[in-house]
Image 1: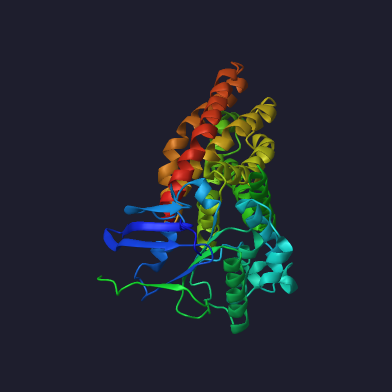
Image 2: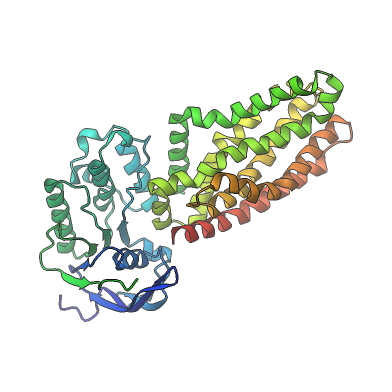
Length: 209
Length: 221
């Protein structure tokens, strides 16, 4: 991690939601293999930051840089380098696990590895079952399986371990470790339910509202 | 293009598995129309005179019934977020959703419309003019209606509001749709009206996806 340029850098980010300043002057610099853990009470802005980084929420101020060049988070080029897993699982209830992953693979583009995605969270036994028969934790595993489906350098995970049992938390931690060893970056909002090793921690203060 | 086809295929697979819900528009279309001969009597002259207009109005209502689920279902299960995160142009993906929507609703109306023409005692010519006019007009209904549906994603009471928002925008389609059919039935010819319907479709094809994409981005904030 001695490269001169950080891979992913944020400077002076600010976010305004519903007329309220959620955070301001937020910055970080991440090198290949780094992980950034977002901590803080509910409503302190962790999700807002992740959605901003994914280009879903507009930023009020600040800039983002990828490999030293400024990026527009709403651009298609930026979307092609990230995985965002938010609170909703994004699976169609009437389609099977496999069909859902196929649809996700087509949307995300690139070379998809369906078998790896099914194996990553041990989804093979219910690959051909409609998603509506799955439990909340199993749906969560399906949402996370897209991390293994298509390789992307930047992972943005919003409380990914909610609803996961201990074994699948370990699988997730393993997947993140492998991703970092391959030079990827991971930004995770979590309450400490997955083990991430040496990660930077960004603590959000109690919000004023 | 790969993502476009995959999305059409996905939405059609969902429509196939929710067949009851999908056929709702067509069933409503036939059922509501069959009330007219019962309500206003079986005078063939009267029915034939109002037939084209009534069928078109009911087609509008039938499409309206299906609109609020177009993006709302995706919003609720989170797959809308996936569309927004796809590196493909959002307008293209939105067009795929509209195509799938039309194939599972508008096309159905086109296919059953000759039956309705018989129910309303329309002359023989209507058996091909009516489906043709609907074939050109209903995709515009889907595209314009989808703008309203996208604007109201996430709002409660979206179903009723979408009617207020979209019905006024559909008036041109109604006017020229009925005009085309009546023109042929009265022996005046309806080619100009059909061409105007086609022009409206081309305009909607070019502009509506951009408007829908912008509205969906706004909804995701």
